[in-house]
Structures are given as structure tokens and as C-alpha cells.
Image (tube, rainbow, N blue to C red; front, side, top):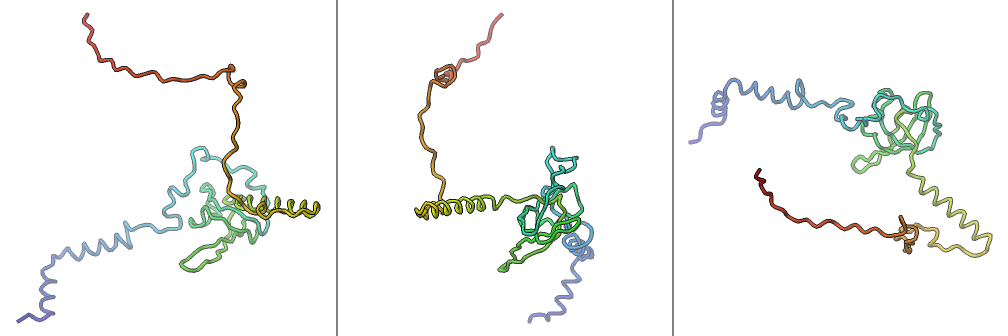
Length: 208
């Protein structure tokens, strides 16, 4: 016959040493709460993320950082400057690109898209100018739009339609070939470098 459940469990519990429960309690504290737990503060895990290069340490930002004019709709990059703790965004926004939606006396409001599972959230934060810089992500697109408008205007004036392939982006091909003029080389001649052949010479002991 099998013994009943409760008496067996009681026997197992009494067989455990007295310090086992204390050890389990200490392990629980070390993993989740209490002394020795993993830090989850506002700037946790940013030892390398917010570190600065040696040449950028111990100096104030240039005046151009404070004299820039930000307008609503501008595209900016968020790059945290660890020398200025005021107005610093959360570490998630470091290196993100956003759009200016508000300008205040001491900060700039930036909209950043954040992907969470199947949703795309629009987060609005206020950042000081020390942690912002103008973004060049749209520079290529804006330059191409400007060149396309000029081509369309020239085609309309001349009456010859512009090819659609010229308005679309195309991959950059290889460079054109050319002939090297040896007369323009150093001392008007070509220097050929030949490696010296390696000859193994065993060590010989010199007898004095």
C-alpha cells in the first residue's frame, strides 16, 4: 500500500536542513530585489552607450550648438551628450531620428516613432539642444527632387519630353576607363619595386 500524501510531504519537509530555506530566500533577493540585484535605473546599461571619446572629454560644446535655429517640421538626430545631464532623453532615443513638433525656451519637442510588437507608436519628448543635431537623412532625397524639377522645367521650355529613366534613381555603375600618361609620373619614369629574395643562412658560431 502507498502511504498517504500529506504525511510524506511532511517527512520530506522535516528532512530538509534548517538553512535551506534561508539560502533560497537569499537567492530570491539576489535575483529580483534587495542588495545585489540587477540595477534597472534610468541610466542603467549606459556605460559604453553614453561614453565620450577622449578628445571630446572635459570641454564645453561649441557655440554653434546653441546658435542653431530649429523650426517645427525639421528633421533632427538625437545624440545624447553625457556632459549635460539636464534635458537628456531616455537611452532608447539615443541615435534616433525624429521631427520637431514644438519649440520652447529651454528645449525642443521631438516626435519619434517607436515600434512595439505590431504597433508603431508616436512618442513625443522634449530634449535640450545639447542632445540634438540637424539630420542629413533627407539631404539626398531633397537634392534629387530639386534636380528633377529643373529637368522638368527645361523639358517644358524646349518641348522635348524628359526620359522617365532620368527622373528615377539608378545604381551607380563602375568608373570610366582612362589611359595613364606616363609623362606626368615622378621623374618621367616608372619605378618597379621588386622584393628581395629570402635566402636562409644558418647561424654559425664564430670561434675567437
